[in-house]
Length: 335
Image (tube, rainbow, N blue to C red; front, side):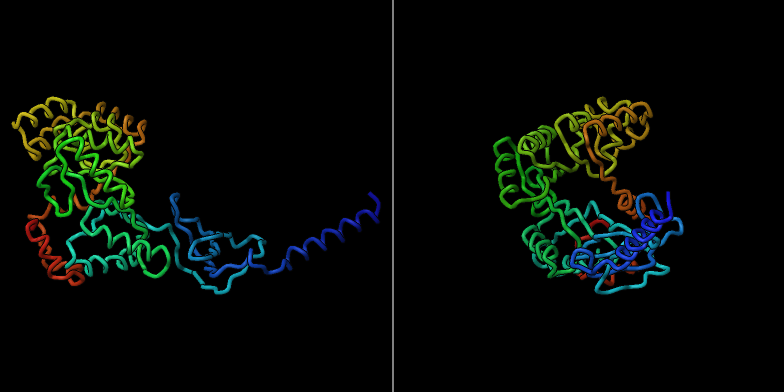
């Protein structure tokens, strides 16, 4: 290559470098906020000493840029994130907004508390404040209220004389159909099944009808049915891990038969299920759940709290200061 050609390439390289370095600021490469020198925590863990600039536009993360890149990105406002961390928002996958009209203000206070602790999405797993919850969610989405994105099931589906206020009680196929009509009419995100008075037959029928409509189903599982029956009916998500434990027993069918005959109650059957836990059975159950895309919400924290209610004094819990007396009163029967 002769000297003149080499000189030509050098000039071209310099011009290109200058062009890249002096890229114009436009609406496409300008963001509302840049958080610089921030450490990222994601599903893989903490970024190993690498720092990033996070660009935010219209309330959403639009660009995550390592500090050593040559991108020409701009922001209206900058924040120094040195020594701080950014991570995906948490989900609370099992919460309840409920208590009737007198507890609306208390439930409303929880919205900012979720955000305070980094919880940006919640699943409202059945309650009696559905219109209010849906209104809050609209306001959150349009930016007029601070709170997490809410996915709500609306009222729970249960049997007649259900335990929780606001539940829709059903006892036959026709009532189940009408109940699902009502849930679709208010555009709930999924169907929540509860088992305080619901029979096994009604439970499986709800799942089948809801699935035939393309509705997402999630909930408890009456111990009068097996986990296999629930999965085969088409359930999408199972709340609480003890229903999965039932499917890990080598004697689930025998224990289920005793429950149907009234020889075993819930807690006695739990003892037998634990005693007959079988690793091979458990692995087959886990595989079937995975193969059928059935999710599980374990709720282990509340399970731990309830297991030690008779040993731990919660009368001085700091969170009590954030709760109204009427709200606290709703839990007195559980303490």
